[in-house]
Image 1: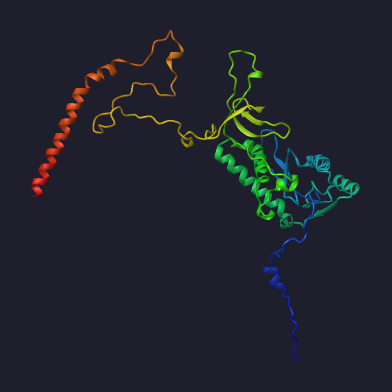
Image 2 (image 1 turned 90 degrees about the horizontal axis):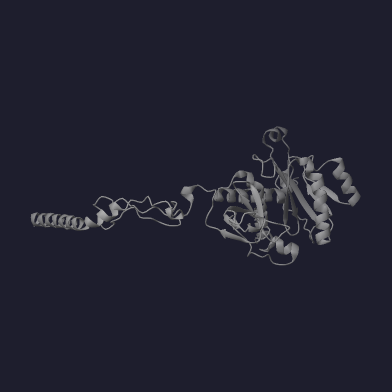
Length: 351
């Protein structure tokens, strides 16, 4: 008599030598409203200290809208106070309270102060299993997206790597406003705020910008602008954050002119050329020696700024060159005549 039931025979030796992680199923828990479920994780330490002396950042992701917030940290011990600020922020701005807070089992999340706060507020703290980052996959994937997009902007613009916080902040700003396939090609911004984002204020990270700084000057002969690079947007102002690379001073201004095709930190060989100059005076005579160009280049300082100083450009070679033009023309005609004679001679030999 045979049984149609399958009998699994477990081999302990096989499991000792071959066992691997079991496959994961797609999550069936779906939030029905914003701020109900928040995923959180801390990224770091960064290999380079940022401009604001930060090495970590805390990433908060809303499960319903996939909207992200990142808050830079100097140490992981600052997370408790950062979380309190974030909780009050979402409660005040969206009139919603966090119901479930999902993290891994790190010490910054599992401690008496945070657990006591969760119990007082009635927040359920979900934890992933040890060494199982797949259970916090939504925030882990966002870490990768933020880092890749931020570092791509740094490499493209050539800015110093201590601006990684500013680059990551712009990366999050863009991700929140880009359509997502997981949201049926809706944007996280639209899901959270119920309106479409404004794309007219977007600028190129690391590009040359000129903020209006005349109001901060004391000398009437000072320039009205300071050449800077664009490093981000302001959450509290309708303006742009511009960094002076010489003094590391940050300017916040609405009156900014941008040059999106110029990156001051990029190497010179990668810069797009603004003008082309010819080094030959007689390009139609390629076999003649190149005549030295006596006109100063465009980037050279002009001597007309100082009327008391005579021009250092030699004028005699230019005058003499005009006397040589008939001789050059005769030399050219003789050279062409010789070439024509040689060509006819070869044709006669071939015949």
